[in-house]
Length: 93
Image (spheres, rainbow, N blue to C red):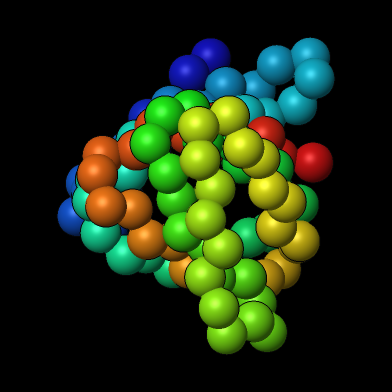
């Protein structure tokens, strides 16, 4: 079954799937800056474009480009900046 999720006044939209290997979402972020919270470990992959990420406890942005992945720990908050509409894949562990 698929669910559609919208965040930040529909500036971030994703489709969620719960399959045999667990939950995953694929979505798009409009250009902007966002802060997300996690309830599980999340592994995100940039599909095209790039994302700048500020991880918890850090003071500098890290850039991830097409096909780069990064991991965000459970129960944390992280910031995302995108300069153009950017699709992503998120796998929940």
